[in-house]
Length: 294
Image (cartoon, rainbow, N blue to C red; front, top):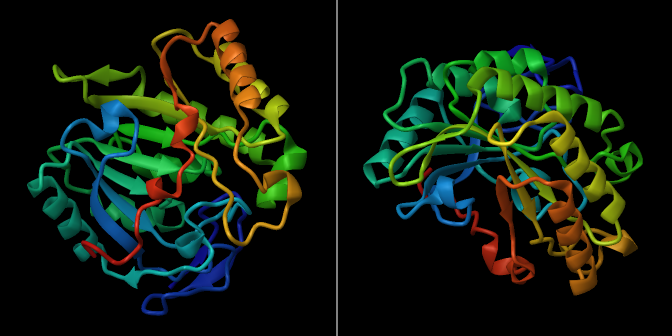
């Protein structure tokens, strides 16, 4: 049991082992809870490669965005509680299946367990895949243990952060976290097959009816990083979920919205990164959370 202030919410609540649940914002206990561990082929090309990324989906979340595509595990908290030792075993099982890397998705609230599981280096890079709402002090637990950071930068507009994720200070916290991630791992590097071995990929999901937010995120990335330092991944896969009741998030992006953001990205001068095709907005890209590999 420990008193948790791991993430910026600083709930200061007791989290216990063998409970599968807790009273903090993430609703999780002390031990990791996992919904899926499998090879994943739908990340950016230098992450998924040809063999797939060894992806572990943690249950619970410190954001719980109203539009979350993984709401069954982020808010519903579906998953199985495991030990740190079992978490380490899962890494090795995925590596034996040929995974290019170990990809830890939304593990912010289990960062203590993750750090412990990585005390011994792995033979492949570790990817920390998160929503960007991270404590710099907690991120330091992962220094020299994580080689690739894959954070979201969801909002530059604090009003949207409050409305959609109940995180009024999101932009300041996320940008400081991204700078810490870059401090730890430095510029992007790749192996001879184009698979990423270290670096930062900043992700942003375009939300319908919120194009100014996306433009401000693009501008921040351009203003804060030089060419070759980070990759920027602009995602257009927004798909309305079943529970979100916010009218402006009730549809996918339009072609006009996509084209406007594409033009802004081009004019920004950012050259290193990716932009999803509009056709990526499909429910089939959401993996089944069925305890595979757990």
